[in-house]
Picture 1 (tube, one colour):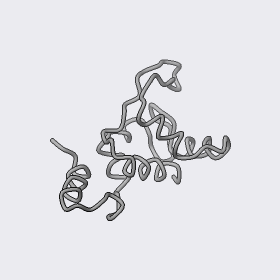
Picture 2 (cartoon, one colour):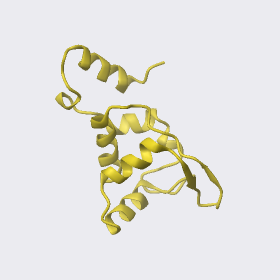
Picture 3 (cartoon, rainbow, N blue to C red):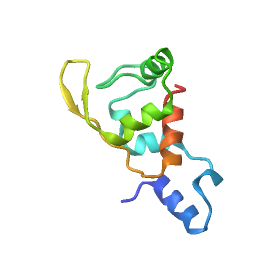
Picture 4 (tube, rainbow, N blue to C red):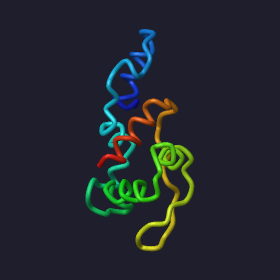
Length: 108
């Protein structure tokens, strides 16, 4: 089943409009991609909280482009318990949508 946000993107694209022509619901895409299973706004879960990620990015003067690499390339991530696992890749190739999610995450 196609996630609702992607259906919306497809419908808008079918009308000849670009993604920026409507507001991307970054939080909904975050949930649809199951990011919430490992990341919470303020509490550590399997992965770091969005607040911790945001603080790290601010401290290192990184922006959404670095977050995009992590969200789109996958690769191994080290968890707080010392184990490693593959990081899930966001299920959209639309850079505008990816960027909206990254910016939303980094403002938590």
